[in-house]
Image (cartoon, rainbow, N blue to C red; front, side, top):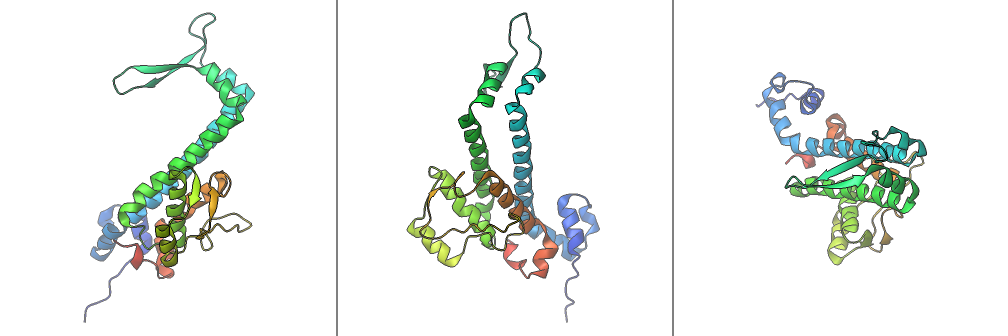
Length: 237
């Protein structure tokens, strides 16, 4: 009779996060590590996107502060405002007047909103790029929520549930009811066949996108929790 595999999921989590050498795992744990690594890596990406969003929000708050003009580099010459560059591939660059665009960002609330929306859009699109090759793993509702939100932002930031989308919803519900991270008051976001209208920032706000990114991270990286819930098999590829 073959002995059951001996798996220490805490050690596997540590190895996947880079805090434990892989050679500390036994053969069964190493095999699990290799199979689970794609899911864990997507979870870590979701974490980086959330952390990046926080960093971006802080940068926006600093830029929108009237005092931030004082932190700009000194003028290169008398009467000359500091400039910056955006490099092209061929080595040439766009040049920009830092004071002008700092003022623009601070004073134009439309620009602020659009930049925030662009970041949230990019985060959802990036997460979809990583989930799609793995066919959204076990199609957990929180992962399926990403799928439908991605479709909305890719089509003019508006929901338009197609027949294909409705068929998918019949098989795989998309919501955050059981998501490990959500609003303290438990606000539920669910994709329904009749859903229509704008996504960002109407159906969801910036903080809700952060909740979703963090929920995906927790769902895909907390191996012990998935084991206790009996959800590991669907996450292995």
